[in-house]
Picture 1: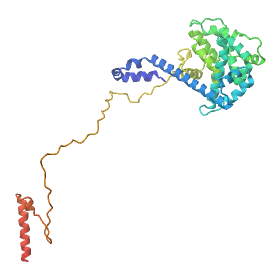
Picture 2: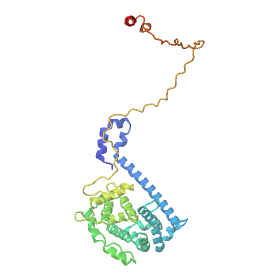
Picture 3: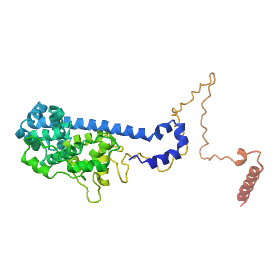
Picture 4: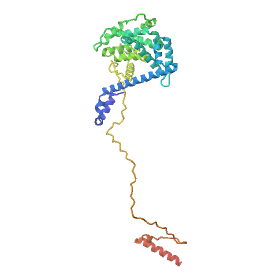
Length: 371
């Protein structure tokens, strides 16, 4: 996480060093740091999903021995039986994807292709509900029924908030939204199935997470986060379930529990969407941003530059002295039967101590001869 307190502490302790290195002005702009990290997360998410989507198509093509797996997906959009078979094959683990990753990539591919055929489905919750009714069988074949039910409940709750007729703006109070939300029945699409009628009868109340998200979008005059979450919920059953979760007694109408806020904030940040103030409305807040690796001990001085690498020394070339040739000395051999000895007085003729030792040795030898 980016922890503002730790960042400020680090900057204060190392201001001089960072200024000398020309980094202080960049690091002191924490808003820019967060924006850069969010952009990086978005790029990584796009790359990851593209890789997983390509891996899924390759795995499906090999499993079904079909060279045009993309065509299989298009055909499945109008054939629930083919959709169920495609789901069975596509939801299995591969060499590069886990079963969960394969299922996520499959749902994302189906969602993308279905919305490409009906781009108006996300223009309003009412249009989305009508689109779901029209594609109920295919959706049930591609997704779990609980996932589809949660999507319908989310759309129904969002519809009832938006049909209140309140314009977006910070002057709109939660009480205004709650009053009209609880009294709005929502629009029932023509030809609705008995299954969706039963789902709608268990519609979400004002404490549902989706109510919190949509009401914040109205208050903050921004639908970026809510639109992103609705798209993500279409192929992520965990997000759909979270948006359909209702708060307990401690949660106010159009509010959300702190754990659910943190889950939403973390998810948005990880996919590269700045949750900003849109998901941290009332009550205590908690920053959920990336924490840089800061050393325990502050840097007190600029580290010295590395020592230059010196080459190995080469021997100095001595030129030979011309015109001088030394005779090779011949070793002298002592006569046979004798042992060569050299006295200390010969080595040190001018040393008094050497002379005294020689005299003492000579006297000793004389006495030995007398005996």
